[in-house]
Amino acid sequence: MPELPEVETTRRGIAAHLEGQRIRAAIVRQPQLRWPVPARLHSRLRGRRVAAVDRRGKYLLLRLDRECLIVHLGMSGALRLLTDKREVGRHDHWDLVFDRGVVLRFTDPRRFGSLHLTEHPESHPLLSSLGPEPLGDEFSGAYLYTISRKRQVAVKHLLMNSRIVVGVGNIYVCEALHQAGIHPLRAAGRISLLRYEALAAAVKRVLGEAIEQGGTTLRDFFNADGAPGYFSVRLQVYGRAGEPCLRCGNVVKRTAQGQRGTWHCPGCQH
DNA sequence: CGAACGACCTGCAGGC
DNA sequence: TGCCTGCAGGTCGTTC
Image (cartoon, rainbow, N blue to C red):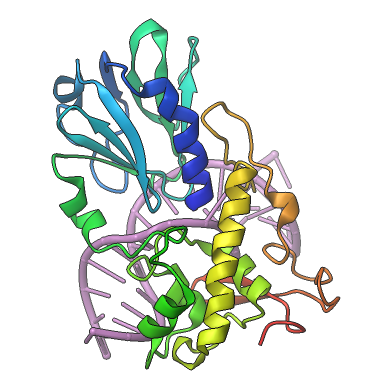
């Protein structure tokens, strides 16, 4: 499900409601996620106050007074804020219960999501070797150009490597490469600085616009209020195999790159 | 070191 | 109707 815009949409949906609130209970129904949920979560969290809700790449950081909860939504995960009693579904794996009946509920059919509790998130193994944020100043055409020299990997895979840059998943990498006119299979080390500047700008533009639209809902993404995102209608290539390219009119192609689908326009991406 | 691939898990659409 | 296959927004660990 979620790439950076969906995670950021979730963060914005829950932050103001949770910051300053105390956790009254933690309920774990299914501890077998991508990694086992920390043991004795309830006793470790009860009474703790949420100081802030931050994001690093696709990880949400619920900063408590001392420790930090690291939440990843995996492929199909979502967090919702519930303000009234709601029936517990088959994939509702954990809840954090706050005052006045407010519940933060994690739902994840495929269970690729995760929950960690740590005192030092910045040095946590999951976060310590992440690359720069795509919307920050460190991520630029010059950065991509420098880091990609002599690398044979396809540029699509370079952008999806979280050590290079975080938060760029399969939807938005296809969209950004299309906007920049770059073929997804092109070797990363054989792309000019000028084209990388166009690509970095495209990444920032597509992610920024998707955040404005509340993310992309393909099947099952919903925000903290249970509403879908509205970026789907703006997708230019992702999922549009056989349809005309909206820029040049050629037929959009779907290919397989590794195990995953890649969509591109043979007419305007080289 | 870089690159390729399998692994984790469930749900759904499509073909027969 | 039911069974099978392939596909789905992520990313870690293993192998070459």
